[in-house]
Image (cartoon, rainbow, N blue to C red; front, side):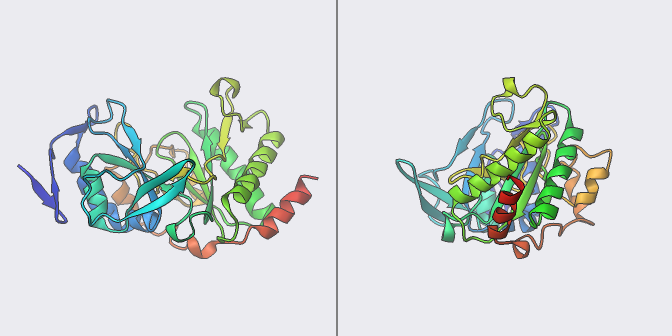
Length: 299
């Protein structure tokens, strides 16, 4: 028997997707139906990468960039150039599209760092702070270091969120006048500078075996065709933790961890903290001046 959620027929609504925490497909559908006003602004006009789990999180899911042939015609798509060809991405601008995709077992939404109208020009920089297992305090420490450098030394505006998985993401809104290769190089130099200044606690080494208990500053996602997890997306972990925007003062909360906010607790939080990133786009800065300042620091 099917139910309807915002005109989307929900199939297999009792399917267990998070076996240890007892979260079923209908729970996920209801979450995304209710979170739609908060997540859709972050998905708006961005090529989408879908992370699907048709058999629940106890089995390996898969990432999907190309829209499936069977998706209905009303699902908006955009064709984006990639190395060696083209990709037909879904663009999720409506609640109906969002819920259709969730019914296709999309648990996590990953978004491009640029919008479809200026696809080669990112409008944000992302630093993914990936700490060694269990050391969320280290993620907080490095996040604070990065914030001071980015804001006080380079004059940028920073936002922070839990990844919903292990660490924190720092996001910087930027004016869309630089292509990905320039922004990537800028982000790389920042990450190199911080990791060289604090070599005992952080690194830009991609190989886990060489990190030696240090936090990994992932700047690589600041590249064409790369993605970052959307704010308010569910992560495919037990209890369905949510990638959650924070205010910077919350990093002083001793109870904070990357998975603190879940499908069952996020709406209570939103009663008092619902607009933390509402002015994200309005805070965008041209990085030209920050690039000049960084060159002086690196002398």
